[in-house]
Length: 170
Image: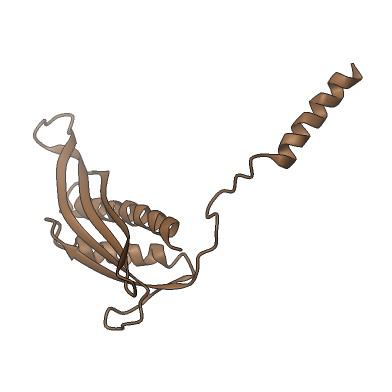
């Protein structure tokens, strides 16, 4: 009986100490590097690039080892080229009393990202992203739902790009 009791205490303690060495978050530290951001908007959302640029910069600035440089300077380590390709918005649900008037909208945006090392002209990331979000219709205020939808899309896209960027940078 004592052996069984000891095994119930020692076995979990052993696995807790040894474990699988899982570490959440970044497995290695980032090396300091400078980034240049280039954004080209080929979508129907005309003002989306300014919203996305601001949110993307805020997301990158959460990492103190990453510094953003002016495109006019020539001392950047990596160039992030973002091409916003297509933006679409369609009704997701309709008003209870009216089947023509939309109660909420769903928006989606696709983007193509290329991250290159500016010193060696080597591509680190070449990927397509598709994000979607929903937004309720705001009564009596025009385009507020569309603006909130664009902010949500920009936030989701910038988080995905930053996550992938942090994982591939040496």
